Image 1 (tube, rainbow, N blue to C red):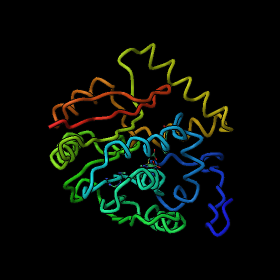
Image 2: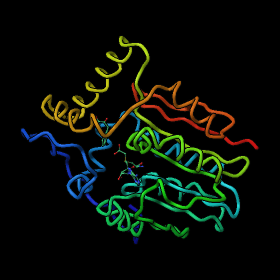
Image 3: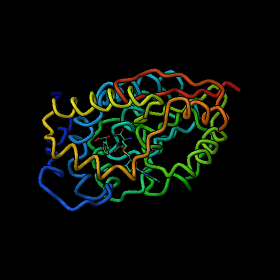
Image 4: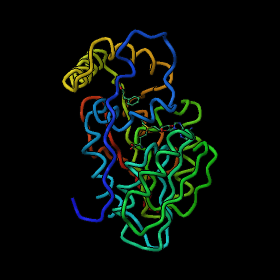
Length: 252
Ligand SMILES: Nc1ncnc2c1ncn2[C@@H]1O[C@H](C[S@+](CC[C@H]([NH3+])C(=O)[O-])CC(=O)[O-])[C@@H](O)[C@H]1O
Ligand SMILES: O=C(O)C(=O)Cc1ccccc1
């Protein structure tokens, strides 16, 4: 480790679903925020690849004097990737999350990161947050938690706020048209979780807890809605099982 640099906090193991519990919908509360880095790394195939690629993509699409947004920033992993990718000192970087437990811890992680570009954190609903002059906006596994009926309106607000040449990085858990593919990809995702030390009880209790709050859609539905919202081009730049990351580009 470089001398004088702050040390990254130790990761706390996610055991939230390890013992039998009453069925309750998943919430981003203090108990989740506490174990979140471990939870997301062991639960989302490709997360540890997607984060550094957000840095690479941000570096390509940031524009001088623009704003960059990380919507649903949690503890700031995607925010810090954007911070490190932005090559212009006059850019503004904003992280938004409506979980106060996440934002409180996120402030701490941002402070530990030794970098000159300031980060503004907003503890508010991303459905109401002000967006303008955006070069890069990230929704890294966040849109899936927004009620489906609000998704087009949010994406339209993002597209309207995006500068020509700007992008949206959209990572989502997806579902598949074909029942057979849905079964295979879900099984492979569960095998990934098992390989990362989650038990069958943990997998099934978490599955029940997220069922009503994490609503995946098909890739075709995402594509069509992004184009309807005002983006000009949509491409998939990453997929591992049922976890996908897209790039929506505004060319004009
Ligand atoms: N309406 C909303 N308004 C604001 N925040 C919201 C809303 N709905 C959900 N969130 C927030 O979106 C985040 C989703 S996690 C993002 C990971 C991060 N991007 C990462 O790259 O580490 C993904 C996951 O847990 O799978 C949580 O912190 C919620 O509080
Ligand atoms: O854990 C799962 O099964 C998921 O689909 C991903 C996830 C990751 C973190 C919070 C909620 C869901």
